[in-house]
Length: 494
Image (tube, rainbow, N blue to C red; front, side, top):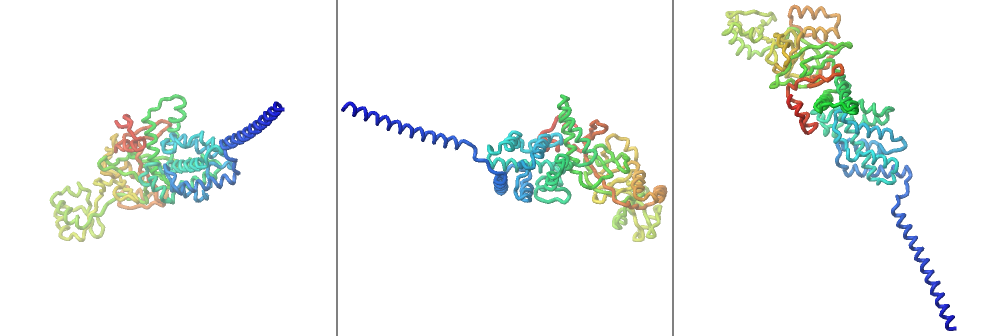
């Protein structure tokens, strides 16, 4: 019996041990399940829940300041208009526009822009792929950040395509702070998102001038097609094309320019009726540089004269003319009586004029210290320089024609006057011809002002070939250093 009792006790001990073991196994499995569950992604949110959560996070980040943005005010304004709804991470609209935006940013070199300005360390294809394909593996904070940064990159792209990065009149900070009536990157991006052809609409922000389009195509060949075919393109050529595209962005606006005057090429081109008429010009020497500008011409004067003040007439001109018989001719002065008659006074007559100077008037066919020639074309918004003819035409035979005191001298100004007047007043050409033949001082008004663009382009594309010009004011080095942080030796020598 004693032995049996020992057996029963052992059996009970074994059963108890087995129960404890089962309980341990149960809790072990339970803990493993909890641990495994904690390592898995959170349950997937519905699209509505996801959008709301993403919008809230976008609003939060914009309120706190995202940092490292080029146009933070513009981005916040755009998202506010959209009630902070994401722009690029919405699968309902498909992802084509998003990938197109990434592709354009990846190819900014083809537009003469710097890839470092477009958040290259954050806007990665792999990150976008994970967000779109496996959104539950990417934190909502990271998704919001990606959407905001891609928006900033596209606003940067649009602004830099249209205005350029180093535009002296419209720098990036000004574009971000103020709503400009001419062109808004926010409105352009919104319209592009609604357009059928997203990429084409975005790229329409670029200047439409032929000179710009030619340079942009050349840069596409240099950085895209030729690079892929293993052509060796000098870095200096790529930079020069990009710099002059930047300059053309500064000069572009919605206004059409019929006249372009390019300082480095010493050339004026008049575009009319599908025809281009070219004129050699003389521009300011480096010490008196002709400025780049966007202006217009509303009139021109044949045999132009400039009235001289009474004080200068009596205090300087008459005394000098009495002492020197050639003074009036040397300084291009003409004397009129109060009836408007042109006089040719000798020395005794000049003495009598001096005694009654209030009855006479002096005029000068002169501006910028230079003779005005047969015609003068005043710029409407520029008072310090003018465009006019010249008496010494041999100067146009020189290769370097940076010779004036800032004004623009044009070869054959009578021909330009006839072309301008014929476009609006073809029936009155005889009146103009008579004034030119008689050298009669007369002002002619154009039917509509003619837009004029004065540019500083050190290269252009003609018939598919890149043509370079001398950097007469030595401006390339400054712009190159701003755009690239260094100067190519090949450019520095020019």
